[in-house]
Image 1: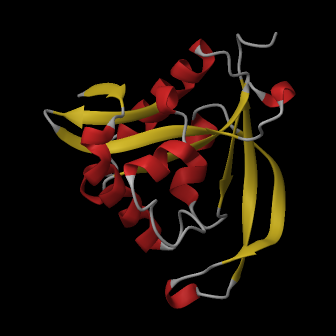
Image 2: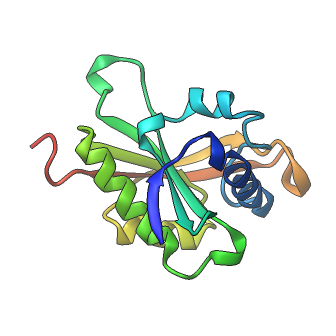
Length: 168
């Protein structure tokens, strides 16, 4: 397995894996992945978007988006991480998380955050195992916009991970 920066050649697999996560109804409020690589590249930082490869097969991905355009928040990012359905439970998520944390700190990020549905215990555990802590609960923060849960108001837990080396 190798972890490399994502590029347009990975887009088809990244999009498929993202859709698998969306289909669970437990990963995101999004109803569909971005329509194109160009749209994706506007949302996520290109130098902080990783794929986990085995040969030329994408097993999962992790990416950071900037939380604010304000300069004072330049070191704060939101992490997204998805593993292909057929490769879950193999430790790929943890390796991706550790890799994206390392990459983000190398680029000067001092805090990462995530919003996770409380029912997504696997994701919560992964984040907590990698140093994130729950800092709050956002009650009925948004409505689901697709599937059997369309229109349902959902809570999220807000998690944060502070760097042990950046911003000290």
